[in-house]
Image (cartoon, rainbow, N blue to C red; front, side, top):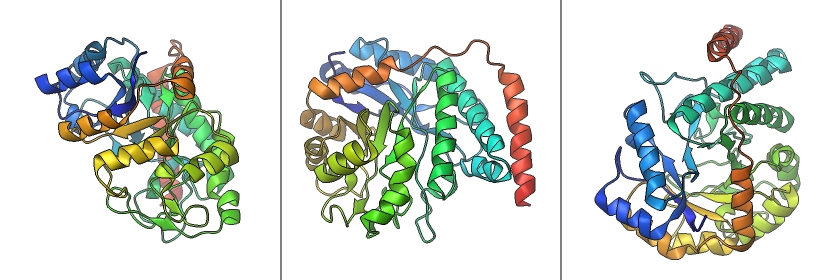
Length: 343
């Protein structure tokens, strides 16, 4: 793929003429969809095909945030409502095999929904480990508060996505669980000592370091780099994400348009690239910002290009023997058990 190092959203359910021209000229590596882009299955399939056609890449990655719970871009009446990640944690506490089974089933069902539409990447699993007093932006999206449990459930989610033919994006590396602010709104600063972060937050990501893609956290870890959030910190990316956690896959930023980042969109883009992220993610569909991001990102080359190719090569064909109806019934029974245990 002869692509520029960014992923972009678009403004609505169909491409505008200006968006088509922009995509053809700038050739982003991939695309990301949101609720504003979704009306019904046929429309989404057509949109996905149009995006790929614009850049002439039949296998260009199309991403979505389809976690279940309150972060679900596809929902009723055309797609099922799925449970939040905390449900798997509840079941895990009853018996670990129940939590892992529910997590894998749910992720597989989500993945088959996505592959039906041509969507090939889900921004899932989360390995964030929340703590008391943290902002609710993670909340019940998390699988638990113990790193080993979180990593085990995240691995099961990954297995489910793989079964449905969808690639995972591990988030929010190296951890969003301690953030006391919503990064859509402002920049959180975590003052926890490095030794404690290594034992808790970072420990949940280490067992998942082999995943093909990961998304950064717009969070300052002041004991390591007091000036920059992980997304724009060369120190965090090299020392913590690449060396400490051991993640060697394709590293993308969280959304460059979030208010946690400072400066203009051009400033933010430059900082993300300079810090060592492979891909800049831009989500809001504003064409003026998309143009600024494209102007500040290089064509994929070298190690970043190799990581991008390896990530796409990790995708497998969906398991044709997977029984969706049986899986839905089993998942529903497990969710009921979790609800009864919380009653």
